[in-house]
View (cartoon, rainbow, N blue to C red):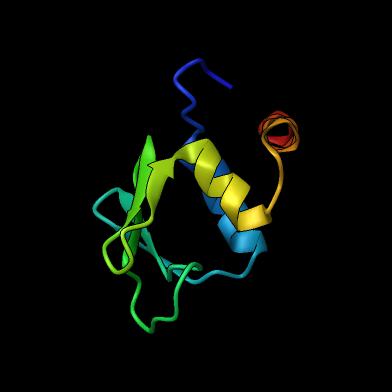
Length: 88
């Protein structure tokens, strides 16, 4: 993982797909249904270096998103991301 804690967006989308979270490509970014509140329209946007939900205000860097999606501690999240990155 780079020092700036940014994960390549394709790794994040791989995780989103494995969790069966619907998404759409929106101008180079990805719009998904926010898993942190009930909604019917994708209000969370995943950018290259962070995410932000315009519905509930949830936001953070790439590692924080993966941690929250999977419910893993930091070290396990980094290990998983590295494994997925090696598969690519």
